[in-house]
Length: 87
Image (cartoon, rainbow, N blue to C red; front, side):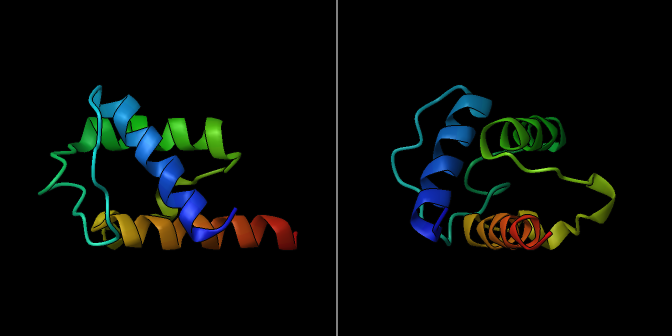
């Protein structure tokens, strides 16, 4: 999955978790401030990402910076995908 596909999948995931359309999503979109995610929606987002993107996410390994923006979560997903492909 490339960066554009990952962001498109994140848009679909966020729309499902937040139960609303996300018309514009850029790499600078802030997850908490702009989209109003909270701790519960982050957990739900991670579960949906695992199901739809085939990732295995260990919450203990996540740093708060991962959830700063769409770009930062995209970087994380792509690094997880690369790590999974390497193993």
